[in-house]
Amino acid sequence: MSTGLERGQQPPVDVTEDELAALIGDRALARDDHLNAPGFVIRPDDVQDVLTDLRDEAGFDHLANLTAQEYADRYESIYHLRKYADPTQEVSVVVPTTTDEPVSQTAEPVFRTADWHEREAFDLVGIDYEGHPDPRRILLPETWQGHPLSRGYDQEKPQLVTLTEHANPVQPDHHDDESDTMFLNIGPHHPATHGVLHIETVLDGETVVDVDPDIGYLHRCEEQMCQQGTYRHQIMPYPDRWDYVSAGLLNEWAYARTAEDLADIEVPEYAQVIRTMGAELCRIAAHMLALATFALDVYGDFTAIFQYGMRDREVVQDILEDLTGQRLMFNYFRLGGVAWDLPEPREEFFEKTRDFLDGLPAKVDEYNDLLTGNEIFQIRCHDTGILEPEVAKQYGCTGPVARGSGIDYDLRRDDPYGYYDNLEWDVVTEDGCDNYSRVLVRMQEVEESAKIIEQCVDLLEDWPEDERTVQSNVPRTLKPDADTEIYRSVEAAKGELGIYMRSDGTDKPGRFKIRSPCFHNLSALPEMSEGEYVPDLIASLGSLDIVLGEVDR
Image (tube, rainbow, N blue to C red; front, side):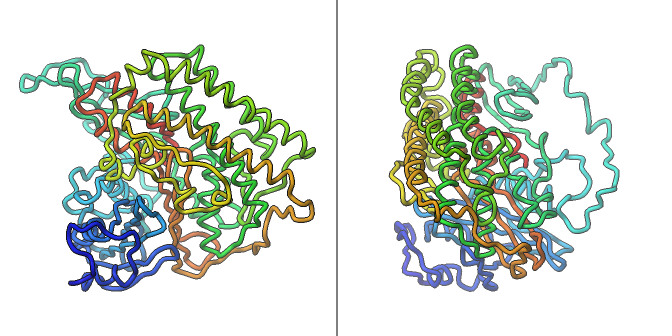
C-alpha cells in the first residue's frame, strides 16, 4: 500500500483526499462524504488500525468528536478527526454495526479521549465498544435500564434501583487489611465548578494515586431537546444553557455556524462584526469568572480577587445586556445574523464600551499584583497540574488548557469564521504546562479580546447607515436535504465547542451531537493529578474552568 507517506516520516501539512483513500485502502467499504470532510466507511474490527494510520501517517492527531446514532437498519459511530496543526484538514471515519449486535472495536488505545466518548455512546445510544478498558455508563446511573437516544427506548418504563446498588454513600470509616491506601470522596459538590461533580480519589499517604471524575448529575438531555426543535427558531435558545456562566453568545455561534453551513446561509458582513464583538465580550466575562473562582479555590481569596473579578464581569454583563436585552441567556444570534442592531443611541453604547476597554489595562495590572505575583498563589500553582502537550492532544484538550501547555491551536485563527481574520490580534500560549500557565493564558486572552472589541467598535462606529444589515433572508422553514451531515465548531471560552448535525429531510435535525470542550478537558484531570497532593488536585480542577452544564449537557 503506497501513499507517498513513509512510516515514521513527518507527514506533510496537507493530505489530499486521494492520499487518504490510498492510505485506508481496501479497509474502506464505501465513501460517505460530509459537508466538512471526506468520510470513509470501515468495518467495526478495523477501527484501531485505520485510526492509527490516519494519526501516524497522515497527521490527524486530534479526535475532535465521536458521534453515535441509530438508524432503522444499523448503528453508527462517526469519529471526527482533525489536525492540531491545521483544523481545516478533516476526515470522518464511519463505523456501522448491525442492529442485533451493535459491537465495534474501541478507539481508546489510539486516542485516550475515546474513553469517555465511547462510554457516553454506550450509555445514551447502546453501542458496545469491544476492548474498552472501562465500559461503564458515564452520565446515567449504572442501574439505568435502556439507552435514551436509541430508537426503541421506552420513556415510560420505570427505573428500579436495588438497595445493594444504591447503598448509602456515607459509610463509617473502615480499614482494609489488604491495602495501605485510603479512598476519599471529594464531592459530590464543589461550588467553583458551576455544577455538581463527584471525584472518587485514592490516596497513598497524602499522595493521589487514582482519580475518577464521576459526572452526570446535571445531565439535561440537551441533544435530545435540540433534535425535537426546528432549525429556524426553536434550537437557538438552548446553547445559552450549556456553558451558562457568561459564554452564551459563543455557544450560540457554534450552532449558528453549523446550521448556516448546513443550509448554505450567508451572514452579512455588518452582522459578522457585531457577532465578533459580542463573542469577545462574552470571552472576557467568562475569563473574569474563571479567574475569580480560581483564586477562591486556591487560597480562599473571597474579599479581593473574587470580588474584583465579579465587579469587572458585571461591567461586561451590563454592556451585553444593553446589546442583547439579557444578562446570561442572551438568545441574540439568529440564523443569518443577529436579532437586532446596536442599542440606540449608538454613541452611548460605544462610549460605555470604550470606557470599559480604557480601564481594563489598569485592572489587569491589579490582578497581576494581587494574584500572579502572590507568593502563596505561585507556590500552589507552579509545577502542579502538569499536562504535557502530547498528553493534552491525546485527550482532545483545547482552549486555554491546551494553550497553557504550549499547543498553538485557536479556531478563530486556524479555521476562521466571523470577522476574526480581518482583525489584528494574537494567539496566546504558555509552555509551563501547569496550573500557573493556564491562568496566565486566560489573563492575556482578556487583553487580546479587548483588542478585538476595540477594532469592532471602530468599524461599527463608521459603518454607513444604509449598509447596516443585521440578517440575511432566511426561509421561514429550513429543510436541508436528507442525510446531509456536518461537523462545525468555534473557539468558545473554554475551547473547541463543536456540533455535529445530520438532516433527515424534515425541519428538525435527525441527529444533534454537542462536542463540549469541558468534557474533554475534565477527562484529563487524572493525568494532571496522579502523584500530587489533594490541594494540588483542587487547584488542577479549578484551572480547567469547567462548567458541568456543558460537561453533562
